[in-house]
Image (cartoon, rainbow, N blue to C red; front, side, top):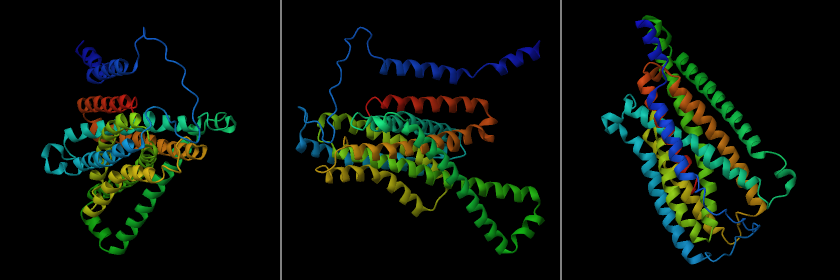
Length: 361
């Protein structure tokens, strides 16, 4: 009887993760589902292709002021987001070997997962299925999913080839050092294997950080360009707040990967700077091109749609394979079911928060 009771307890699903999933569904429902008694929304007006709509909220001077505010605010929040994990070593509870770091990283991984599925991919669908584009071929073939699929496969190839290349370089360095093999033999094969395993894991962290930043940077330039080219203050105001939160939490995810990669101070600064500056750079570029660039022109829709689809495939692959699967199927979480359950809770809340943010940005 005792064994049967123990087995039932072991087979019982983690209550923390189940409760979090239920809360997440309620949270999203309250935020996203409209009132059933509300009047049906009127049909949207026909799109103004090739030029921005000149509605009552069109005000170029006011929009320019907001764009300057956006550059400063997004730059500051991006630096806070990506910089916070890099300085976490000064806080003992936030070191990579502590449980709190695992929870925070899981939350940030959920943010990156939702960024790909809830922000970047829908933007690509909107662009490539716009009525401003010819029905054939753009609305007759799912280009967004096709390009995202190719992007995920190419990301896997980059991931695989980069790891193989770094392993080959390290093997050459070890063989040229001469004494490495003899030293490993004297100290026992187990110790040498552990050292090689740590080196391989560090290389993987570095490849993940670099490829992840590439996907984030592409999307950041695109959304910055769209904001910078807009002259609609009614659109820009809520977008600034949404993008600030978006960049801060996305930066936390990237910063955690950079921290684990153990780059030198110079490389850390360069990667943090590029992440922080890409969206403000895109806004500034959009301001400069606002007289000749229209985000509803066919050429802009195709370019932005394809870039967003590529970024979505990359981010989805990285979030699922290199971040979530690597952690949840790794020895740390597999050996601690309680920590694993709380990590799932963190993933759900991170993804849920970013999913809700998709209502505004």
